[in-house]
Length: 219
Image 1 (cartoon, rainbow, N blue to C red):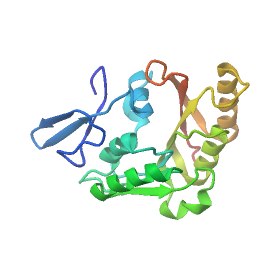
Image 2 (cartoon, rainbow, N blue to C red):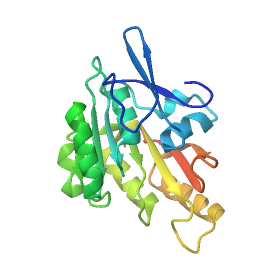
Image 3 (cartoon, rainbow, N blue to C red):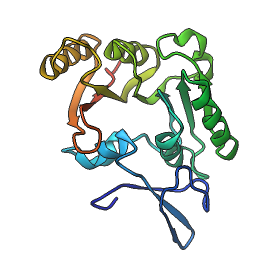
Image 4 (cartoon, rainbow, N blue to C red):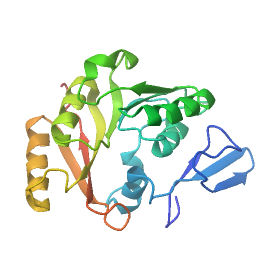
C-alpha cells in the first residue's frame, strides 16, 4: 500500500475489472485499489490502526452484502482466492444488472459466488454460504442498515470474525449524523459486537462512516 491507494496481488494477471492501474513485477502483477471507488480501500487509508486488520485472510470464506458491479469484490477476491489460497467470496446484490456484471467476473475468478438476493432475506441465499464467514462486509442502500448488518453477523459471522458496516449518515431521514452514529453504536453493542473503530470516509465517500467490529467469541 502506498500513500495514495492500496494495491492487491492480482488473482487474474493482465486483466482489469474497472480500468484500474496494473503494475507488473516478476512473478505476477499488482492492481491499484482506487479509494474513491471503494469504501474498504478508503477505510484502509483512513484507519487509525493497522490497515491489514480490516481485511480477510487468504483462503477465508467471506460474505459481501451489496456487492454492486464488483469493484471492491474483485480486490477482496484477490486477497482470499489467490492461487495458493482457495477461499470463497459470496457476493449478494439485489440488482439484476449488478448480478450480470458479477456473473461475468465470476467466470474469470473461481471462488467468487454471485447471488441475486435481498440482504434482509438471508433465507433465500444462505445456502451459498454453508459455513460461517470470518469476514462480513455490508454496503446496502436500504433503511435500517444497522439492523440488517447485526442480523447478518448473528447468522453468518464466526466468533471473533471481522465485520465492516458502511453507513451513509443521511440514510435515516430526520436523524442527524451524531445521533445516527450513537444509535448504530448502541445497536452493535446490543447485538454483542465489539466496536473496534469508526472511520470517517469524508473526502473519499462523503457522508459515510465505516464501522469496524469484531464478533463475540463464543457467540
